[in-house]
Length: 462
Image (cartoon, rainbow, N blue to C red; front, side):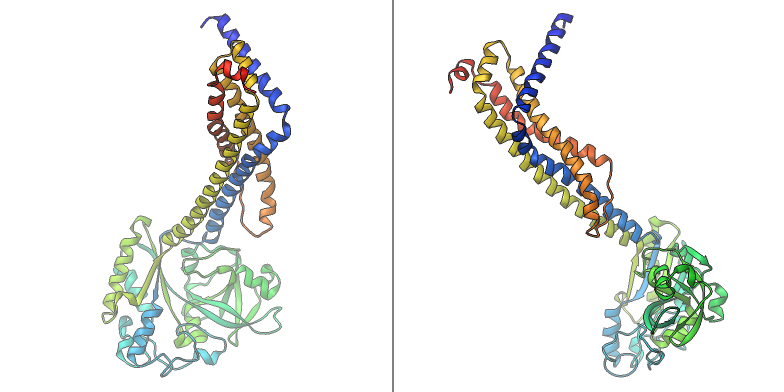
């Protein structure tokens, strides 16, 4: 291509851009109405990505205390109930006691000391079980914890804990309130990545001595004392007994057991068993796999140990879950929501594109004689095609820019609804790509139709 030919092409492109600008500025309101679909679509993409990313951030914050290799072992409630009914009733006597599920603490010390025997009581290794006599239930024990630790290789930590509800009084409380009380061993802190705001966590000697010490979650400390910082060193009453607060946790999320540290009070495991839950305790065992890729193998090994200890039970007697699956499931749900919202955004763009196509068809029909004159003056099909395609693209770019501004502008309003919304800068790029693509794709056929008009037909058509 010679320098003269290149200069002619550049001049022609400049003339085309000038014609496009004149046509667009001559029908500003029509251009705005045409671009509405693209504006809505672009804003939707900004919000969709922000909501989707916000959902993922919320999941990560909610489960930030999860250890990817964490495995949780609990006695299956359904299996307990079936076996207990076959064994002659529920713990504490025949029939169902007051509609309360076994294995959970209730308000009042007397309720925790109800009758019934703990499975494996008086037998080594947690042996025994629900089939052995009336009122017995499946209950994990420290012997099971020790067996898992000794017989399953590749575990960094193994610890037993129990949780339920206890009557709490003290601080700024005017009356007793039910709070989640978790009996734990010292390893629980590191296993669940719990961070201390002040003080210290439960120590091994606290557990051995059945010490009446407690560590408060951030929220429960605020509720009882008005401030998390004011709780440390104070005393509270749990089920009528005084406990010294030796530590307060930073604000956290949830752990693999589903317990929220923010709303929980932690006491030594042996203390919880002796003074709070008694025979109604529902212990669970938590283990951490050294290699996150071996979690499924470790679950199988743990199940084998439990089946050896409780040979008269089926595998359904225990529920074994891992934190990785929990986190993956929650993240998958957030991504599914994002995908559904993206589909909605795509539909909005298609509707907007159809709007652009319809307006361009009308524009071609209205400007048929103009097209005929341009062709008579020597304009090629490529020039006509480019002119109308640039008009459609300009409309979509205009709509995309307004949509991006609107999308980011609406984020504070969406946050007022309580949703977690986290804007992402790259979403503006995606939004503009969709907008330009929509204008180009849906504007091509009307532009091609305009370019295909014969000069004689175009000039004679009214």
